[in-house]
Image (cartoon, rainbow, N blue to C red; front, side, top):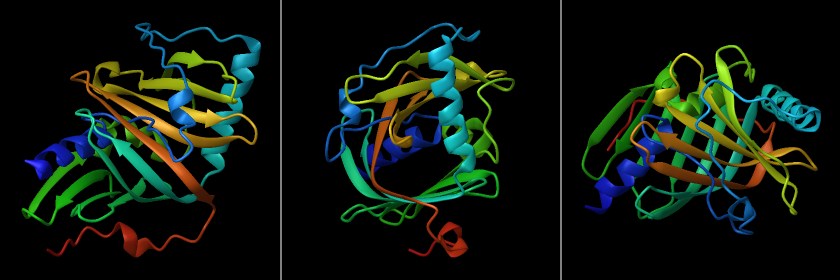
Length: 222
């Protein structure tokens, strides 16, 4: 049962389920007040908020590679930790710390969850996952992506942007939590089509590091 619960949390990470912020080692993300919006038609931002949104968009689009530690909180409250690697476009790897035997890899337009404990592999199209938005070659908060909510910086300088795919908002939303100064992605939250939330907090971020392509191979061996 433990394996099944963790798989559920992982699938949430992908976007057929959900993703989000977690309490990090310094619990910075947990101090962000979560707010939601049912306005799938988008929202008007103030000039100040628009400027921050533009800066966040620029940070994401300049990102080519990333290595970081993560803490994940699944929809059932189960916590897990590990290391995540990103190599844009379209590649991500979540390697969970033992005793978990789960591995999540995105590449070639799909996300794959592999549980070596039970020999189970689950595949989801990347374009059906809110997380896939983060892995786009270039992300624009307009056009095919709509901002549905914006929370201005709190006392700790953390702000958040919630986005959906304009054509299919019911697929779920991705909330990106940024530190204002210096501008840096700190966490994310995914809300899936079933209303489940998975939270992922990042720490020890290393943008721009060398990330080998072999990390994203999907020839899993049990």
